[in-house]
Image (cartoon, rainbow, N blue to C red; front, side, top):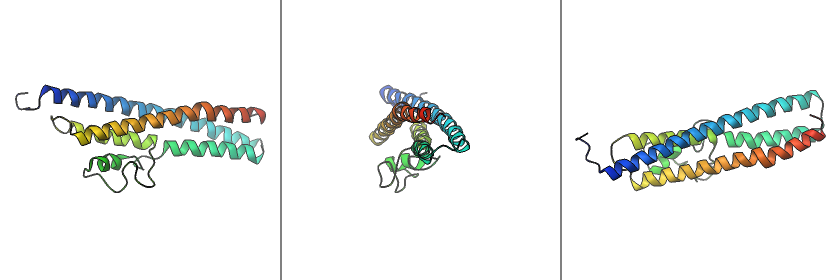
Length: 171
């Protein structure tokens, strides 16, 4: 388009960031679906434990695992949600609760929103990304990787421990 005055290198950087954000959004959605399926299984196991009148320690262990999973899942628009991306960039959606702010915690539900907001900002014009936007994208993608690593840990170490306890409790 002859109206676009941005150098090819700037447009290539915008394209690369867009692809990285798209892949990140897809990964966040996949991880969120995986976690929600796991929590559904845990809920069934919890109901079975109550029905079978298993000891309180069994119910407590299941509840603790589910609480960790719920914290990782989060809710849409919560900490790490759409407002976090704007706060990171100093944009209009920004507020006092950006990533790393006191009391904030990234979640799988919120990270997809923040990545989507960054994608919208990036695609708003045919210009090279600013250094602030590039830094925000890198930070949010790093936060996504941390969340995915936490999910892997939850599914491997902590779920294995829960399964061992449930086998002993014959559930």
